[in-house]
Length: 224
Ligand code: SF4
Figure 1 (cartoon, rainbow, N blue to C red):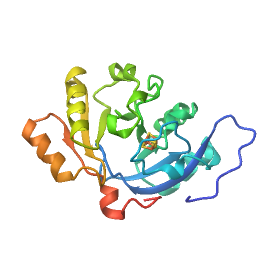
Figure 2: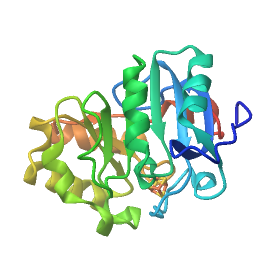
Figure 3: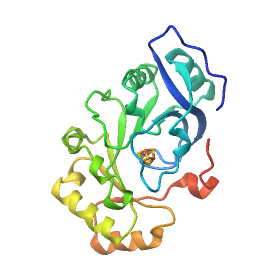
């Protein structure tokens, strides 16, 4: 954690946070930009490849004012609200609006298991679609998909060839590529980046291949 959290017993405008830190955005459309990450605590899912299990429990209560103050201290234009599953805390939606009002380029990383309908349209939503090998395919909230706009992105983390085929089917069935950017990412240590890249090229799939920059740079250390 980058700063001492502020006590907030009397304020309803508060959230449980695991960390706030400055790094480079490691994935999706804003990859490479200096970005302040606001990591909310808690997630109702348990994907087998999860790299942020340290955010499942613990954390500290922060007021919105304290969060905004700490975000401003880092001096970056991009802010990414992530988790865990940030939308599991209902007040996350109000924080996203506050960040937009403050003039930041705001993105939200969400599991796709919780309704995104109340999220401020200025926010770029990066919505996971959980594949069978994630272990959480049953949690996909399919009613989220018609809510997506070109401002949003959809992400599949591919664990094996069967996941790839399944994801291709979802892509076609829901015509996702016609709505927004679709990202295919290899599950670290389960599918080689080269293998997934070859499959995409071979099929001329209308998706963006990506590897997670922060894993290459910092080996996925917390707070980076
Ligand atoms: S939704 Fe994200 S934070 Fe939650 S278990 Fe899956 S990968 Fe981890």
